[in-house]
Length: 108
Length: 118
Image (tube, helix red, strand yellow):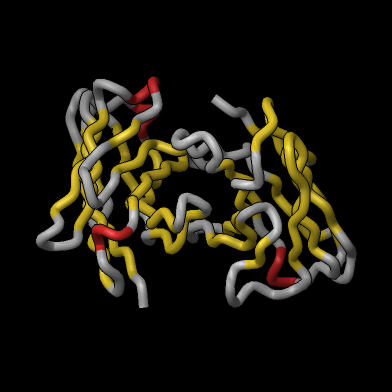
């Protein structure tokens, strides 16, 4: 099974900062990688799929890139509503659909 | 609009079973697979398994095989997740989610808290 490791696990940022979260895979795969945002007490919501495709309705300050074993999620200018936990997920090996351990974005 | 609505919170004793339902609406049920994900208190997301709403085929992670059963009822567009021989570390919020094109999960149900306690 493909294992995903996110870094960092915790991230402090100020409103307006540019932040990047990395997701590394234990073995390379194609671009079947998704990113989710989860706020406390709520279900996750998809932000990015196919590594770089922005889900409909998601602000353009979110972007994704990468392939093989390294993928990134970037928020170009963090807004107050972006403070949440972010997860990557691989859907390449069909299934299991593994998640990364999460990155909590906190206000500095 | 697509909706997944789950059944309510459950409290179970160790060794018991729990069955959570996920009623879908707003799309053709058999055109999309359903996955289940759980989240223990303060922890990350754990993928629990997948069911094809068209064929009924399932795939479970090895750690849950033998205790987990996923089913669907196409007449009511509802998916079910049954977990048997519950242990305290099965305490978690359980989510169902629609699998879109094998590329992402969307939308998710609202979650069902299952508490296992003696």
